[in-house]
Image 1: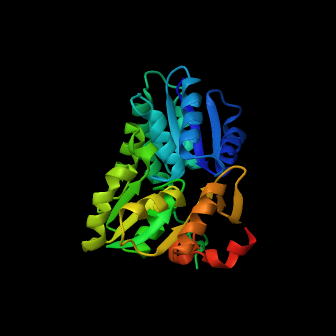
Image 2: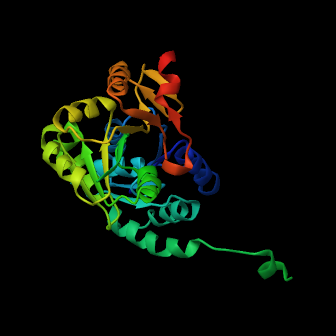
Image 3: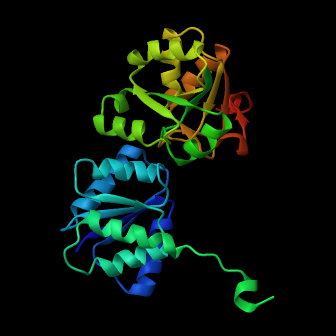
Length: 134
Length: 160
């Protein structure tokens, strides 16, 4: 099973992990690495690298924000590997990853590409007017 | 021209990209950090993880001298970015006409000296700031550009 490492600013990573498990139940090969700002990019990158090495079939890093420090650290960890980074961490993204990774034949890249496409449709806007009328 | 000289332990990252680059209309980032410049993976991360309209390069202190001299006189809005104030002390020995201002952003020295919420400085960096201030540099703490609070070094220096 492809591993998932959530890496975000502050404890959003752990919170997202908790929320995912509330809906999908306890998960294997899922880990949260909060970036609390008390260590540097290089040290955090090393933590991410270690987390990925603990997974048997590769890793998708899920980060909150492209080009931010957790993302840059994840780039460090994916350098010269087949692991990949998905940015824009959210519940729809996580749940789809969790459901789809149970299927056969995915690589971290093919799984991430598939989830990325459908993820764009998961962001929506609702107004009271549309739902309840004016 | 050098539009901003900034110390940020994390160099180029989300906050820096989104706010500072737009506040100062930055078109080029010169990163000066020996360890980053000599690590091919880190160097690639920082030179590629910027918006396409922006150019970023990473140099050692020695390599940076000529680049900075060029940036001082040309018309491209440039962010001169380094991890800590010690690097600016070194750079000012090599480049004489740098702007006399330093913005200190996130610093997270363990066992360091807390100056503001987002900046805890190594003792060596406090010394470097004192040296810079004595040399006429206005030092101020600001994390995320124009929308964030500014704390002047001169207002806290006597307490450190």
